[in-house]
Image (cartoon, rainbow, N blue to C red):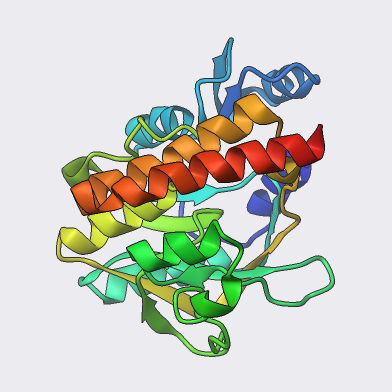
Length: 257
């Protein structure tokens, strides 16, 4: 899939000069060797172990030389003119700090990629599987056929001003797996810039289901990230969430066992 992703970038008809930076996070499936074979077509950083999503992304973003940085999942297929449209949007709106586009399933249907910032009650509902009460947070019924300001958007495709990233400090590397993108979006808003969903362009996103199969060790890290976010942004008020996450972790792990 990484080959399809890279080739789709080359074929996206972007008029702007592009720099493709790929972080291989300690893969063992032949991906690193394939990436090395591409030579100067890409900039490759090869980690000998998995440093986590945040640290790996920061490696790439910090060495990027362009005016804008695009976070892009390797399980995506770039559509024509998407990169150029997002650049033009940021060029014409100085108040926009970042922009995302439509994420499409392979069958062309639209994925839900926009949410509001979570409140403490949303954590309670989410991790007790009371999703019905999270419709506002999940932006259920959001109209993906119009361009609009959003609080947070999926970092599978997120174009950000490089100068803004330098100002806010990139990803918080204490987040290993989850909520790093939520935290980054909040930092963008706190800096005085806005985030937009741009409805006129898209990428195909195959998506990863690996977290659904996560074992106890990985899930523990995931829930640790969740608690870290709420503790960082809500302080002492988030203390009630810890036993809920521990309960959720033990129940899910016992079911899988």
